[in-house]
Image (tube, rainbow, N blue to C red; front, side, top):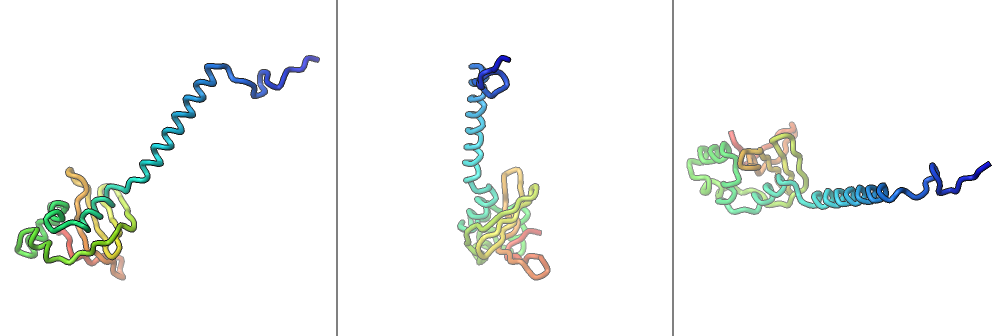
Length: 146
């Protein structure tokens, strides 16, 4: 009876040189992909960036971040320009707590506020802010569109 060495065929021995290179290349690519996906997770979602910027912005900048229908509604209710009406609103300036995105709609929870956004051709725009949840699962908002 002939005994094969442990590194012989079928015993997990050394791989042929080309196969080893392919394995190492695949492992390196997988490691790089994992590293890039981990780094991408460090960036806050765009809706959180927009909501945070809105919370900390001056009235003029806030008006630029509004969805067009929300800006029009604000101007119509106050019979003033968006900037004038926005400067009279007292909106919280809290940090981001969490966010939820569903298609082209988003909700961002801030400390003391909830901001609603919609995805437009110009990016994420605010549709409502200064919102507090009510007992019936609705929101009462200081600023909202039609």
